[in-house]
Image (tube, rainbow over the protein chains, first blue to last red):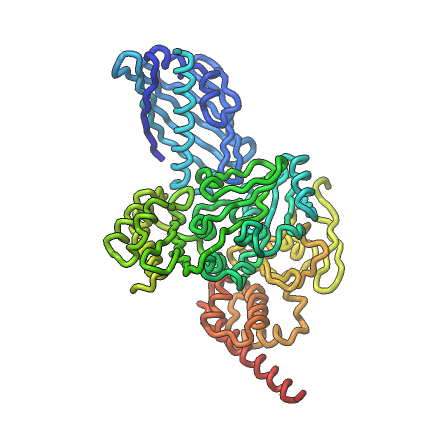
Length: 151
Length: 280
Length: 168
């Protein structure tokens, strides 16, 4: 499933760039993220709780940075599974930053995402809505964090 | 592994749920046990609400409308002789859920807690202006359907809270109708419409809610007001239908594509309005 | 074993004690612990109807009913209807009309049909089809099952009339 979007943040590009590479800050913005830490220069570990109707799934994710152009672009790959269960998620992601006017950064993202296992019950149509609403939550939290620290 | 407990009162159920955060309340079990069997969910306990007398019965509410206990089965609602006029649509909806045997098991409270966007009760309750009564450790609250439904499969139910009743305001004389389009009898709706007429004279209006086309039923009171007195005017009805379709946010799934659902909405809404005006 | 508990259930008129997992379904207990195998495990999701049994006189899905929620309730399986006149009439009609092929759906069909003819003495075809819509059959195409229920219902109604006349 492919999804993409973009959102503006009232902060200069270097500030946004630092933020997206800060696991602690990202953990506070990703809905359901219980923990995030850096493993080495290019990989991170995170634990995310996804709730959907009566199903709660806790994914252990490994995120690897595949390519990085400072201040401009990050290409990453994430893989995760749900403990002993057969649920898995994987995604390849591209994030690009631009500064159309000074002090405002445009964050554009795209992801190619797949999920199997328990949450597959709901089908792709509904999963898309869920991912959309989670990304909207993230955008809100992320923008708020940056604007708060910029102020 | 989990265990079944069957408290006798709402207070006991709430206390048990508060003391056992991994316990889940269980109404009829028709959806919950299916999910357990498929290993989609886990619980330390299933707290069966089936033995709580206070969750049963259909009768007058304190507010002058109708109160339906959360543990009333679909079959009991489908056979309830009090559901006439403006409440007739609720009876029809209950009778179209699944099949005879599952209607003996499933309950209105369970269906509302599960909040499947394609479930039959939701558009009817939105159309009727019903309130969902919730009881939890912090007491009792009543929410309008629009406030109760938060997102896809997401409700205002807090952990440890249960649906104890549904309250319908005085229903008016109706008529009312529930129209459901499904792939096969007993399936969830591809699109559903609940429609009730208000008043009988030339100024009469309709209340309309569309189900299965978004996280919650679509209802537009301004559009309903604009249609008042014009229930026999095809252009006004077409505009009304278009307004509702614009607010839809359907998904592609096995029951139909989003595009198909968007095509169905105006046809089904117009048909439901004709049902309550008697126009053909 | 941890997670198991003892249930006392009233099954076909007899009290039975079962030692089973706390979240066992009624169907699990009937088939695996009590060897009552008329009710079948088809989908285990409540869709196919092959597990239909009666609890307190009402047909329900055995697979969607937790055994632990049935204590103090009266459970009746097809085995419990061995001496029931209406069930015998339905069974004979199913055999005569060819409503049984592989037989997997038959127990559930019979329980549902038995409830229908008890509630609606002479159901018409749409009523029969609607009542049986939650019982899936992959062999017969339903025509012969519907015929069987029609015939059995007519026969039962006739018997009732004859009895009434005899009393009067």
